[in-house]
Amino acid sequence: MRTRWYTPWIYVIPALFVLMFFLVYPSINTLIISFFGPRSEKFIGFANYIYCFTNQVMLTAFRNNLLWIALFVPITVFLGLIMAVMLDRVRYEPIIKSIIFMPIAISFVGAGVIWKFVYSYRPIGSEQIGILNAFLSFLGAQPIPWLIERPWLNNICLIIVGIWIWTGFCLVILSASYKGIPRELLEAARVDGANELRIFWKIILPLMKPTVAVVATTMFINVLKVFDIVYVMTNGSFSTEVIANRMYKEMFIFQNYGRASAIAILLLLFIIPMIIINVQRFREQEAIR
Amino acid sequence: MKTKQNNFLINAPMHVFVIIVAIIWIFPTVGLLITSFRPSADVASSGWWTVLAHPFNFTQFTLSNYRDVITNIGIGRAFVNTLIITIPACTLPIIIASFAAYAFAWMEFWGRRFFFILFVGLLVVPLQMTLIPILRIFNQLGLSGSFVGIWFAHAGYGLPLVIYLMYNYISGLPSEMFESSTIDGATPFQIFKSIVLPLSIPAIASITIFQFIWVWNDLLVALVYLGGTPDVAPLTVRISALVGSYGQNWELLTAAAFVSMALPLIIFLSLQRYFVRGIMAGSIKG
Image 1 (cartoon, helix red, strand yellow):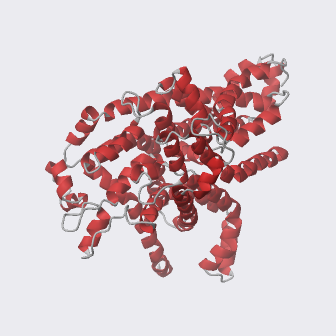
Image 2: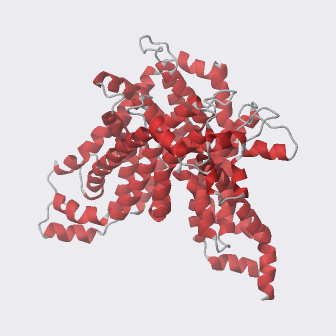
Image 3: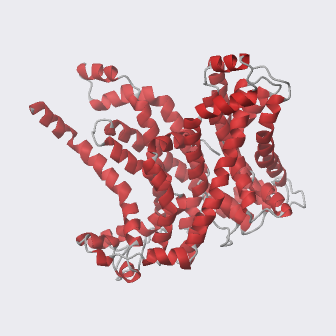
């Protein structure tokens, strides 16, 4: 389209201004203040970063984020994948899909309340109103303080909430990709006598690999930034701290802007590979156009 | 007939698995919903599943929890606040982005490619990167704790993704349309207003739903820029505070949580197609 030289800028400048103000400038500023003290008055070199890698609570947060990555990412993706394949064969697929996808409409805060109630614990002898402990009592076992039992059980309980929220997302995307596989291919394999498991590993999985990779990286980013679930359910007590909650605490509770900024920069560093992949994907897409 | 039966037997474990997963998935939400309608004495003394013994005995249900949370503990106010935050925080970025995406898709100008790649790169920048500097500016300008500040903050955080999605859609419109309109003497703005926007409505619907869910359910941005003051706090902030102060009053917590979930769930159930598209498109947001 032919236009006067300044016309495009009239369209673009509001967006450019907002982005510069809310993303570009603050990111650069955060990088700078991560090398300064709590109130950004004194340059202290890498001290904030050294703190991040030596402080006990920070190390717990890193460990927990690793645990989140190790459990949350494979389980959401794998459960989403097998559900996608299985649901394709049942007639009531849409209902089940809606049920599993629904948590994504709920805020993480709402999900936190829902699951805190599921995990609710009362001392032995009183009536258990949380369904998990009621079930244990019914079996004659002792109730378990799910969110207090450190260090593994309570973290796993929080991770389950994340899985509950995000599996539906994986399912919907993977299901769309699965339905794109030509049915003749699967039929041919069946006629040749391959069993379903073999078809899954040798045909379905390789064909869906690109989508699985996209979904897995999305889940990976989600895990790095996980905040709301932990904030609402335990606020990081009993060794359930995570990086993003730690950043919030350094910023608001301890008012240490230097440390909080260093934590933010570390989060960004973990995510930078994703930025590069995004830009590359865009370039390829443009090249085809 | 026989093969059909055989198929069913072979598939039986699969059906069982799928249905068990679905039950596990829906159970916690059902528990929340039922609890929110039970009197507090019942909630404290027995599990919510006990009502299932006689589900049609309506005397065991009450609306008083909802009355309580909406009028006495500020959830009504928080609901209104959430609406006040969400509506401009959805429309603002979509208006700004539509203009920009149109220019990026159909106009030639210096720096077009550079700036667009910058936008794409900003897609996944974690918003934690921006909180402190912006909070400082907001404090100086007196914008922290105000709706205006959070409208623009959400607009800024949503913008890269909204521009990216709008660009993908608008650049896919057939180029002949633009050429013939230009020959007919239409100005770029006329083309934008009478061709591009009307044709983009399906995309705008999906993007609006995504941005709506994102802002409605946001906790972090509201915590940082609005703080906990009840006259501005949205539902998420209010409820997370209630979890601390009313930790054992499950009938109140569950009612409050359900108030916050109602609108997104209605949108989810009634506009599922757009909803799915919007969420899928928006999943990579920072």
